[in-house]
Length: 94
Image (tube, rainbow, N blue to C red; front, top):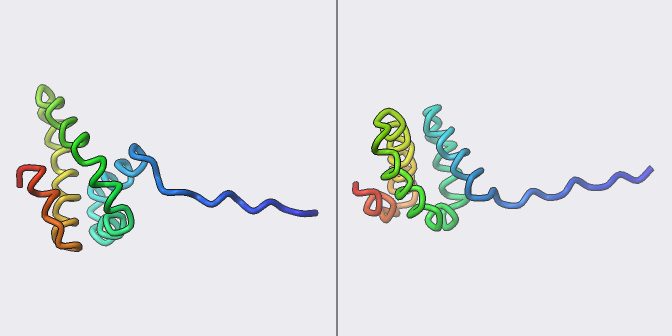
């Protein structure tokens, strides 16, 4: 008779956020990447050092490192272009 309201979804956790961002970059969905960056700007900044550090751990796997770096660069570019925040490019070495 009475239905429970579905639980409101909170913000995605760090792994889910990274997955959403990397997927949108890989699919070339700039608008989606920009929207995610706007919506989760501070959470992304909080995760950024760990994401960049992980790239260094991939150096023995050049193909994976290149793919990962491309995703990071797409996020950093979106932050710079959409939000004027160049911290991500600077921290990425761009």
